[in-house]
Length: 122
Image 1 (tube, rainbow, N blue to C red):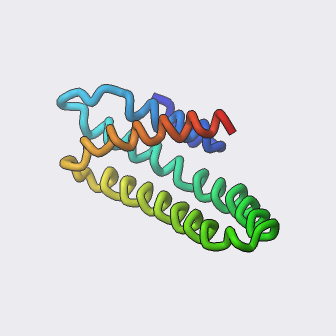
Image 2: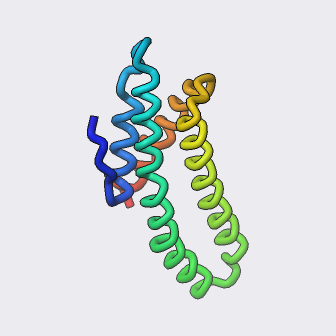
């Protein structure tokens, strides 16, 4: 498994997806959990940067062009914060080996896959 920290969002999400796709074999849960945690830690700064650079520019442009969209932009900013908070929570749970939470990664995997498809179509 590649442990390098990817520099762009698509590569970071792809790396996380690959870690999540690795089978969770009995007796190797600790290694799998560590790999997923490292991948989550790799996504976090890239995701923060993506939101700070790309989203802030888009949000500023939207509110400049249409002041009536201010409320929607505020909701989008809140959603960005929620996404970052979820990644931090997942990283903390994984780092601390909270194993009952492991099934929740399947849902995260599906969300990431949909998100990557959306990024490719933009």
